[in-house]
Image (cartoon, rainbow, N blue to C red; front, side):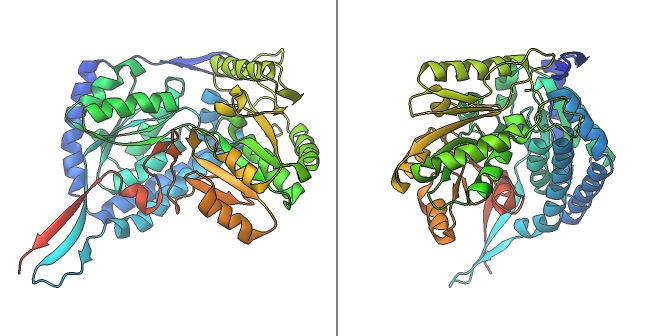
Length: 455
């Protein structure tokens, strides 16, 4: 497993692969630790999460620096990622006991009906590189609170983050074998999924990876939550506040240098405001600086790996050959690092690569439409359904569109799509299934047990 700085193209470290025999022993030890953890009180679990939150906050600069070194996230955003991890830990420390409390079910018989929430066991977490702390911690906080243990298979290019998280858990008071990281290639995941000690699988990653893991887990009859790719549509209606819309849309498109499943990707713009939005968006996009992610003046860092940049550039070129027009960017810069400039494509239509596929980098696509109905139809014309947004001065109009007409797991009005511990997060269609965060997230990996007591 190799970690490489995408801004300098220099190797950071190499990590030995975990053998299958080692994995078997790890899972054996984890099974015993999890059974003990399941017997601990909710108060003790809350205390551990609060300690974890404090350590994240106290060491946020160190962890943010590691994130930036390994995958190229602009440093200020990496600090924000670590701070958000502390937030979700505090959230579940406070709210988790209530979410897991036994519930009485009214009955007209002499029997007592209850619903009890009990841990499942060991959860295999398969995590991506783009938010190496947040993607894991947002699963770990509710899962630990529920009484589970976690074995982490992180993306190989952020192995340093995986080890840092393991040390962090021990510092917070979680016993050694309650959480472990393993370093194995994706080709060996199936054996871990089928291992009898593993009770469930959560994956955040590509749709292709989710399809493979979902199939394997289905064969093993293991519970899964899959948070997959997205090509979020942002609908700009004819009464939108153009300056507000352009500012938020550029911010969303460039989150993590465009490497976020919930960043804005497809901009569906009504004809009446198309030219005004285009100019405002282009102006704000041009103001963003690309460069070394450790420099606080830079807004856009490198892509995480060279192959990811090459894939993105091929998608842009294919789209141009299909009729799209580059109005900004679109060329690989002649410099060290896996950089790709903020790019805008217009004349993008269904059937083009830039419309049909997820563009995982700082590339925005513009599609012009005539009516509100056309805008919604085009927005929904996607295999993905993670997030969507609508911009309008008529809040009632926007709310109706967001709540009833846009097809996605999270829809917002005059705002950007983002995850929040207080709200369930997840997608539909090929963006996955299941939910993380909020009450729904903590109940994904528990045994929702019916209890009947005769008096």
